[in-house]
Image (cartoon, rainbow over all chains, first blue to last red; front, side):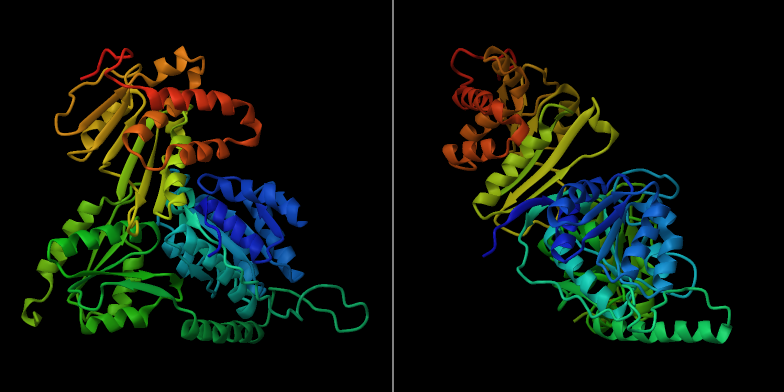
Length: 358
Length: 188
């Protein structure tokens, strides 16, 4: 068995990226993701990589665009307000079909907000992290070990589909330490014949450009990109289910909230309530089919988030009115208390349709 | 084994370091562990705290809200966390710095004048390590020598010259007995 280290989530993000072949990191400091940059500053020189603290988030994301254009594996990291600043560049990267990995260790908003953990950037991450018709692949780790697996996967899939990937973590996942073992798996970089590496008069020049003044030409590039999104949706959704087989109430939660929800689900079971947990690991594409399938057996859903209710919309879309969908959330940097989630599970169990009791 | 540990004090007391050592002690025994710090402006001069879970089973919630081991290193943290301890919990506190108010009768109280002992031994700032030594004697999370070598391995390169001071503090805490001589004024 590989050796286990005790590592912060933020440090694991950085180490996993380096092991995935990332050799360029451009960032700008912000709490609570500072250790990502600090770790990169220390480790990148050891692997002949580049760590650069840019003059701003806007500069950093455009450096990512530049490095990705050359086919390099590249990453940037920030927290909520900083991600908003990066959004223009992210739209350009998506429009350029460039692979890269972006980290958002969420803090409370809106505005400068606070520095405590939050999940209030779900809409931004899954609906539109920038202007225009596009998506990012969005991964939501719930623990430090999972971070290492998802960062590696994010790099590989981003390369394969030429779609930027976002790791949507939060202050709790970033700051906590858990044991982590790195797998010996080597990265799977894709061939990148499109990369700007110098044509040396031996091939036609590659051009990376996001300006298409002809509506038909632009429409065509967007439709082609959406065909790739379709295959991502068909092949790359991830979720974890715990005790859902016989559950009357299924709690839906991701990231840090899912950890606390798991404790609440176990407490509910001890009280004789058949509760289960459905944890989306990819937030885009959303594991809608797996969630919808639970309508066959469950009576009610309860979505738990560290926000006023954002993912709950995806839950409702998946459930499509077939079962009641309740919501419980805390925001502003507060983390839900397991007892409050337990209470919400109890009331969802009571509200569930009684006539279908098995 | 299911230790839910909450350690609280003020910034600079080595609260987070103490938690890290306990988490590592669990890790060396193949237990599931987690360590979660408070972070933010409250750490500058105010209270710092961290949650450590060491368990045979999977750790769902890493945030310790009702500790079964509570370690308190300053007065504000006592007021803030003493009510949170589970009935039957082991509560350790630095009786040099804390005058307990509203002492609970449903928990095991382990006062130790950690800062005073550290001062007497010429290692004033290592009250947390004195506390660790005492804690390990009361709750044998790990065998003593293994625990101490884990502690020394965790001292960063720039602080290697403090290994001996750490040993002094650790041994003093380990040897402390509330019933012999060094009784604190708050001992129950």
